[in-house]
Image 1 (tube, helix red, strand yellow):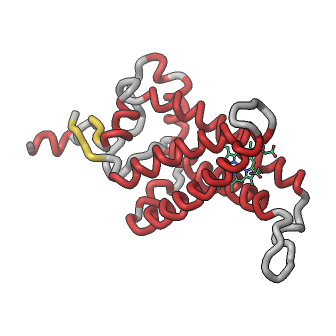
Image 2 (cartoon, rainbow, N blue to C red):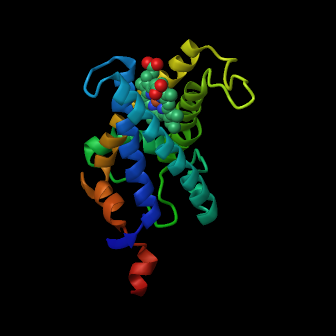
Length: 209
Ligand code: HEM
């Protein structure tokens, strides 16, 4: 095993800030929804709006970072070893089998992670953020006295936004469980905090050293 710098500074900042903001937005959003009462409706709605602008800012920076660094390539989907990876998560790991794919500095994601994270970035986050923006500007009147969003009913916007929020919560629970399936239960979480992870060494490289 060799300690490898897998997650760069911005990547870790973005990951933990996004996680914190999504949890914060879920807490304030579900209070607005009426699921529970902690802050009171007015405060929850105000905090939700502040948090949502922070998330929009973060998402813009993250998109920029993915393209500038070329890290977007990590998410190109592949079916190669996808079936093996699913078999590992459902059967193999409970029998103590080895991971079917190797994680390296350049290939951080296994085929299943690529698909799931791509769906998260291209479907789940846009669904929640776009419906949230429509929610925010629904019936807002601009300088020219024109209603900004009036083509969609508030009920349908609220439905899609709440659906996105529920799916994000499902993602969060499954994601946290999956992080415990690395070499040790905490190795993946530690890597996202420190940036370093113990990865299997290439046999060729190991021989040379
Ligand atoms: C940029 C992202 C987001 C924007 C612009 C946004 C915007 C909004 C707005 C404007 C409302 C109506 C309440 C109000 O007037 O403040 C709302 C409600 C809500 N938001 Fe968000 N939000 C965003 C992200 C999220 C996230 C990430 C979650 C949860 C994970 C979430 C969960 C909810 C829920 C559950 C409601 C209540 C829906 C209802 O019952 O009508 N929001 N959001």
